[in-house]
Length: 327
Image (cartoon, rainbow, N blue to C red; front, side, top):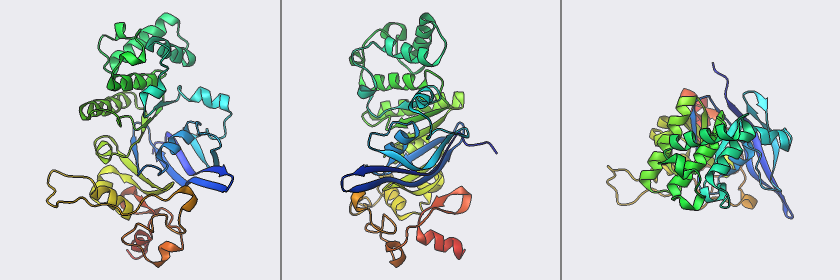
């Protein structure tokens, strides 16, 4: 059995405030294998982007990792110094941020930003780094890359800027790419191209991808497995096909029911009542209990832990635990 490229165990992220400590991630565990695309979905505020930020050591102060561990090829990286983490970030872990405008410096040419990143992580001369940067831009689909490399970010469209950001994330040949909503602000046709590009490049080089999104269509098209987060906790994780066709957690069922299909005959989509709880008001027991159509007494008192069901899936739900125990 191949070892996981990334292993996250019982990750807990806290934000100390004047009114007490808020827990934003609470016991999140998952693995990503080499060459695998793991999708991470959930509503805004579920903790998806926070998970990515914790992995690469870019939590916004006063946020901190308060428990658990993160391992990259067996090496713990959550306890490294900021300098040691900086060497891993970019070199071994690449990051594609949601908004390319915040990822690119508007004052520097694309050439400068790419070559500086390449030379930070690879022992190349200025000329060799420039050639590598041009090849990367060409690889991610920037037309006339040799000429466009000296342009500034504002000279590019949104889709082209996102391609530049992907080139930036890949320039040191990382083992893991964390893509945080890489297609959110793009046209549907450009979204498809960006998704194909990420899949293709990672399949070629055996890199693993953690794809953070709220779009189940993107997950269905791209990921091998999917992890569903709710209020900083893992609701369900499993193979994409299994989760989409046979969702087990009531929250996942709601997410799947809210996706329109070409064969849909009803006039209305399924909707999940209510909203994600604030960090200061996460209910006791199962965090989903105020919105759950299948809630019963135990859900208000005890928090369910992930229980293994068939084909390597895990679900954090008392109903599924009961089924496993009485199967």
